[in-house]
Length: 531
Image 1: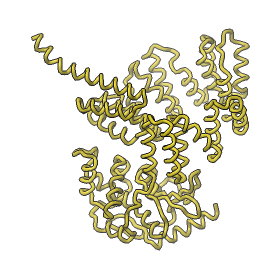
Image 2 (image 1 turned 90 degrees about the horizontal axis):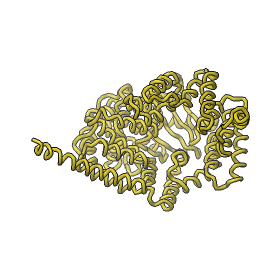
Image 3 (image 1 turned 135 degrees about the vertical axis):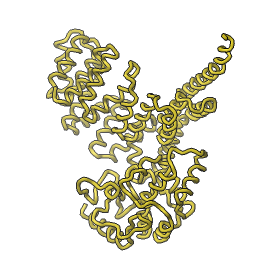
Image 4 (image 1 turned 90 degrees about the vertical axis):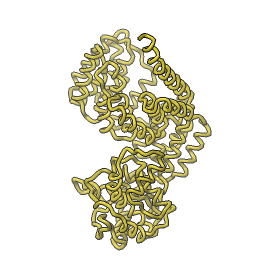
């Protein structure tokens, strides 16, 4: 009996050892920034164990580190289909949503990642600050108190407890809480720093004044560095609306130590807050070329270039950075993402009239704006739809598109059904019509699937040397209150068709006529002159 059991265990134990070796090797490659080798190693591990959640989530982590959000989402869907109770996958999905700026979904997934065990601390470090950011102060406090019991640590997240109390108007209680902590352990620098940081927003005294008072009244107080105190002082000035004074202080600090990137980053952040993007750009570029892993710098630059349709300049900067940092493979992901913002329909030869005729031939369910299937599908669904239209000058029906996606993805199973495509296509076509209307009117628009799906931007074009983003959200999701037809942003103008309704129906999809659209463009020109 013993011999039989050993024989049965040996293959499993051997397989687990192989997987552990692959994981260790992938971690080593990742630590050396050899991301493509790390990816290849994890894919080899998946050949041994195709649905192993540890290997799959390691791959998700690798993609997230490189900024490859679509790939991360695709693997996460597989993990959660096969392992619905694997808590770590929900944590990673929370990070994915957080990277996309969807804080509510990030919070939801971090909540699902909690197992009510001591090992949850890594989740709480991301969840609690987001709850406080959204004003969920009571929930944040309840979770902190719960985990103090679980961890048997009465000081767990005291600084965040104080922040919640401040936001709830209980400033005196928060002050007492942190002061007691500092009095009990004055030698712990972290406690002293958090005490000053918590009250930097509301105190009449500057952080340096508060710190001096503490030093005079508290024996053995931990010594804060000049950099830490200056950082708190800058924060104090910013929170009290003294932005120019904060900028002046930062300039003084940069002059003292021109090689310290911390202050250059703070200056760039403050210039962006003051909407001085052009002044911030040289600093951001310098910082990015030195360290392309800084997510704040990277996302700020990406936003600047993409919102101004300066795709070529952004790609050139990425290539320069890659030359300086050849092992930073995530830069390829940024180059790919930049390419996504170029016109996906540039090779399409369809006119607006031909596009309408294509729609007439389709058999689709009537457009129902209350059906949000199109928002739930993975991005590659609308990308493949657009790609098919661009290369074939033809609109596919749902079955043709279904087969096309399966062939391109190289698999039989997809995380959605063919009928989901049929329900999403009317919305895609409704949004796409504006691209062809703009072409008919003599413009050179851009159609980007990701922008339609995520931001309801049907097209981007230039008018009177201004970048115009044609947004259709008010038509897809009627707003609760009237929206302005034109809204200025740092990257251009968001334009909404608020005063006209489509006059035609084509296969159950509302369509504007060319006459209607010309009138709308004339109205837009008049509005731009007033801005």
